[in-house]
Each structure stands twice: as structure tokens, then as C-alpha cells.
Image: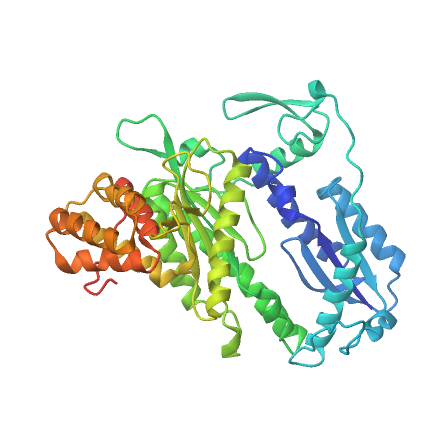
Length: 471
């Protein structure tokens, strides 16, 4: 027999509060739940994977289904409270009934390897059926005056000071708050004001943030021939995520700064930092991914990530930031899927220096598509930063380059834009090669992204190694 579980809408558990301190506490609770789960059920289940809100293992001989559920539910109530979770003991006869043959016009794709990979495919399939039939508990109506001021889902019972506010929070948010304080790490803060930087004498603070997620991880998991290799890979992914957080925390510490990270566990990595170090942190992430041993020997299964990245005001609500970064990450994944690229990390970037909230905004569709927040290979993004650095060295501030946006909007035809933009750029830059490279970004639908990157670099002093062949 097998046992599997899935925390439903795990990001909802983490980001149900707009307070970073409480969100980080939720992440710690999940991590502790999965650590204690493996310890308390070790005589019942041999866990192969338990991280990031999902887990599965092989039921040991003599272990009863009732005992597994009983022990699991105790831990669930201790750490996850009222949050919905699906768990299932999968009997051997259920596994045997799953075939890789057509049934009712549908086909369960046969895995490339037999044995463990085939069994795992069946476990995932049966869990998907279980999740489809799952119904979350009905939401209880709460009078507004008694509502938790953090999540808004439960009755507020505890008066706590969070940041500069005194708020009434529920039992669940209180437990998240407690564990966040207990497990706070050196160099990591729960206060965005300790991370943010101000522009000149401005009052508004800004932060840099990126949210990375592994690409097609399910496909990689299903291709392992043995549980030992699967476990090695799973542990390598967790070690990578933790190492990235430590490296970027050390990078910040070397500059007298701090970071924030509300997600711990799994292959998701979200890190907040001062905006001036975002580019350096992204380069560090890409470099670490390329050099990390994920214990995947099959060249067709290289581990890569899709990244949503942004510079964003410190007063944006945490839930909104998560939604924006998820949208940007989706843009990166869509571009990767379109190119069917399994070798590169992909990224989508936005600079929210205005109140234009859409993660991908098309200024005008014809004749010049000036869109922002597009997915691209990390190397393409790197070239945008390098090109922006060259523009900076030509004394082209963001205000001057933004005139290109106005030219694009005002132009009625593509050739009209090219003539007007070329005239403007040659006069501004006095560099024909640089002018051609900027116009090339326009023809490749990346002009809007270049302007976003240039604004961030101009404002926050991103440093880069100049490339003579930036294109």
C-alpha cells in the first residue's frame, strides 16, 4: 500500500495574511509539520518525499489504515489547524486497477520508465481523483467587529502589535506569529521598511523581489527508476532552495542589508531585498542553478526555473505582491513552453514605479507592440541589463528614454515609429550601433521591457559587466 497527502492551496495558507511575519510563520509551520510527520509515522510509512505541502510513501507491513489517519490528523490539527488537506491510503488493488490503456476516450500516459516511475504515476493519478472529489468545509459567517484583522477568516481573539499597528488576530494567525518569532533567522527581517530603499529625498520606499519555481518538476519526478534516486533528487532541490536563501542573505549582510523570505520548503523560492541588489541576486541564482548537482543524469531532464521578478513599492499588500509575481512567473513559463526550451532559466520583470498594476500591459497593439512583463530567457534579460548599462554610460536617463514610449504611442505606422525613434536616438545617444540595438528590441517586442529594466538600473544603480556584443 501507499500513502499520500496534499495541502490544498498551500499558498493560500501562507498568504492568507498581508503581514509578512505571519506569512513566514505559516511557512515554518508547514516545514515543521512535514518534519514531525516523517518522525511520528516512521513505524507506519516509509516516506519517500514530504516537502512543500505534498508527500507520499510506502505503507509498512502490519501498519493499519486507521492508525495512519489517526496520527496524521493529530499532526494536521497541531500545525495546519482548519486548513483543508487531502490524505489517502492507497490500496494495492486500487493501484492495479489503474492501467495505461484508453478508457472512455482518455489515455493515462505511460511513463518512460517502469517500476517506481509507473507506481508514482498511479499514485499521482489516484490522488488527483481524490482531490477532485474533495469538498472544503463551509466558511462560517463572522460578524465584522469580531473578525481577525490579519486573515479575515476567523474570530479575532489576541491583541498583538505587528509593525506599527495594534491588531486583533485569530488563534491560527497567533500561532503563526509565535513560530515566526521563535525561528527568526539572522539577516532576515519581517519588516519591509528594513529592506526598502528610497529614491533620492522621496518618501516612498521600494523593494526588489523574485519568485522562482522549478519547471516541469513532475515530469522529472516520474522518470526516476528507483525511490533512492528520487529521494536524492528531492533532497537536492530542497538543499538548493535553502542554499539560495543563505547565499543571498550573506550577499545582503556583506552590504549591511537584510532580506525577507516568506516561503521555506519545496522548490518555490521567494526573496525580498533592497532594490539595488536585485540584479546581483538574480545573477547569483542563475549561476548557482547552472552549477548545482541535482542528481539528474538524463540530459533531457535538466532542472531549470521560471522567475517572476519586480521592483515594487514597500506599501503594496503582500497578497497583491504574491499575485503579481505569480502572474510574471506564469509569463516566464508560457514563453518557455512556447519555445520548448529545457536548457535555460526564464524570467519576466516589472518595475512598479507607477500605479499601472497589470503584470503585462500592451500600450498599443498596432503598429508598435510596446508590452512589458514579457517572459524571456535569462540570457535575454541579461542582455537587456547590459544594453541598459551602455545607455546609462551614454547619459541616457530613464526620463529621456521614456520619450520612446510616447513616440510609440503617437506613431500610426511602424515605419513612422522607426524614423522618429531613430532620429530621436541618434540625437540623444550619438551612437549608431547603440541606436540600432535599441530599435532591434522594438522589432522583437522587447522595447517595453528594455524601458522597464533601464528605469530600474537608472534608479537603483544596478552594476553589470559590460558586453561589447549586447544585442
